Length: 185
Image (cartoon, rainbow, N blue to C red):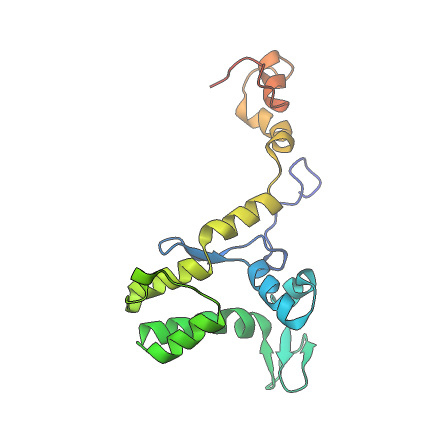
């Protein structure tokens, strides 16, 4: 129910409210991260690109045109602009293609610490992905953009957090995030 106190609760990759990645390896991204990268490259607003990078959106590299119809010349934008760069990096690192890896790191502007440069295989992949797409940054952006502030959220959370009367001092304090209200545990 989008009209309730919590507002819209659906997730949508094209709005940046879905993260993809590996918690184990510490990297993640949302469509927003890649829209920001390509926004500078294509001189198109990131918000517009976010809609293009997810769903039934295809790009024809020959004609340089977008389409919502799949054809032999059109490639799905999410695959082309998000997954392909990740897969290329995975392939280069995991197949020990040092020159290709170095080229990709330079293109993606990934700077490794001195002690990480000698790593290979999975150890290098973890470091590279964490450096390029840190999970913490993605989660931080998703939380700050898509979740309500504590003051806003407490107004509807109070009824779930507090079992007493909804009009007593404790419940009112919870609803208002009042630091002077009675302490509740």
